[in-house]
Every structure is written in C-alpha cells, then in structure tokens.
Image 1 (cartoon, rainbow, N blue to C red):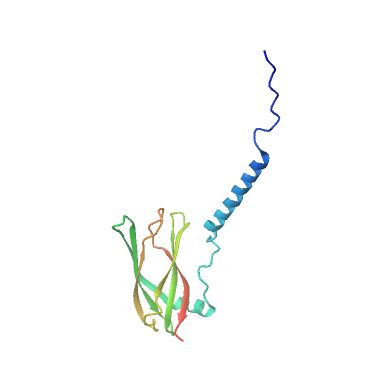
Image 2 (cartoon, rainbow, N blue to C red):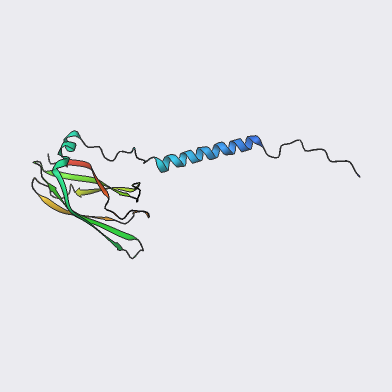
Length: 159
C-alpha cells in the first residue's frame, strides 16, 4: 500500500463566489420586481382638478353593454358601447376614463385609459348626449368576463 493522499484542505466551494452570486441574484430580482410591480395599487389613476372632481357627478354613463367576438388572429375582441350625457351647465371638451378589468377575486388584471369625449371632436355641451365605442383586444386570461370598472381620470372644459 502506498502513501495516503493528503487531505484536501480547500473548501469544496468558494464562499466568496457563493455570496457574490447570491447578492447579484438578489439585486437582479429586486430590479425585476421594481419594474414589474411599480404600477401597483398605489399608482395614480388620474389626477382630477378640484373643478373636475366637483363636476364628475354631472357626467352620466348609460346604456352600457359589452360584446365579445373572436378575431381572425385568435384573440378575443371585447367591445363596450354606451352613452355619456352631460347633465351639468358647462361644455366638456375631453373626458378620459380608466377601464379596470379584474379577475373573479377582484384583483386588477388590466387598466386602460381611454377617451369617451375626444378633444378633436365637438364638445359635449350641457344636456347633450353622445354614444361611445371602446375596443379591447389585450385583456389577460383570468378576466371575470364582467364589465370593467370605470373611473373618471380627466375632464377638460371648453374655455
């Protein structure tokens, strides 16, 4: 029998390399989480002026209905049609709303900001009513198939 090999005194792994790799993964994970979750529940859904917030109750949505159809690109196209009425005393040139789609548990899946009254068209005068049509083709799976929540995000008046 020959001489026994000397025991290996070096650790099986490099502790410094392990710590550096762990720290790098932690920082990368934190950066990814920041960019993915930065539009969380605390995000600004629209900053209404005090004037617009006071007028919000004068804008009425009615006859809102939803239809869904499969498109040729194998996605579902959801259309929401309805009517907006100005029950106030001021002409409105722009109304933007956030359409918030949720899952069956009420968790937000998609928030999309859309215009019901567009600034390029005629203003929505007092006592006037106008139809709108909104199309969505990027609603994620898991959507509860119900109408989205509508939150007025912006109102601009005719000067």
